[in-house]
Amino acid sequence: MKRINNSQWNWGQDGFRKVLFFSVLLLFLGCSFSTQEISFKGELTHCSQQKIALYQLFPDYEQKIMEAEIKNGNFTLKHQGITAEQLEQFPSFYKIALSETNYIVTLASPGNKIVIQGDASNLVKTYQVSGPKDPLLMWQLDRQLKLFIDSVEALQAIYKEHLYNDSIKIEIEKLYNQYILNHQNFLFHTIRNNSASLATLTAFYQRFNRRIFIEEKEHLHLLQSMYETLNKNYPNNPNLIYLKERLDQISE
Image (cartoon, rainbow, N blue to C red; front, side):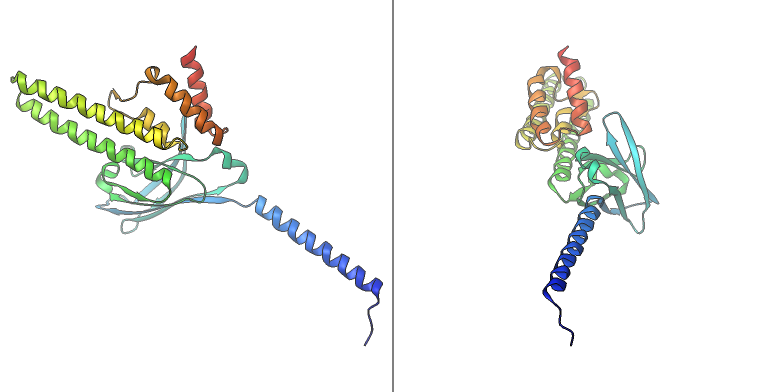
């Protein structure tokens, strides 16, 4: 059998090292160009719609990502092809829409897998979500707003029945103001205890019809504090860039 001399063996080791180096380099480059996705899976009841759409929301526009068929109440929506360069834009807000008026808004990041269940006849009032913290916070904000709306609608019904009873109308007004205060406290609590989440922006700007729960100018210090905290983690997020412009406008 032919013996391998030392010089041949050393060349073999060097060759192996070179092959290994280039293999690792190609693997690294492959990873750097890899893409990520966000997955939304749904289970709907009373669903007559055949399609559902996914939109990515930006401060001043929305972009349609995809549309999917609904089969037996089930659907899957995905935002695919998110590159490493785009990661600094996340977390991002998304709209999942059955129609122009029947939709929910949630918050997600690459790698998230979110499951949504609800009644297709009124998605925002009935949906539930399982997944990471951000979409859960968005759901809690929607759920609490629903409780507020239900309470107010019940008061309105009583008010109409007693239009000429001043004492009852006074009590209704007191209850209405208390409901507003309770909801404001919930929103402040959400902001205070979830300072690292962009869902706090939704909490700050949440409203019902013309009712603004947190007045921007009255709570400018809070909004500035929110921006400074969020900007540490998401300096290039479009929502934070927009918020900085908004703060500059208010301060002028």
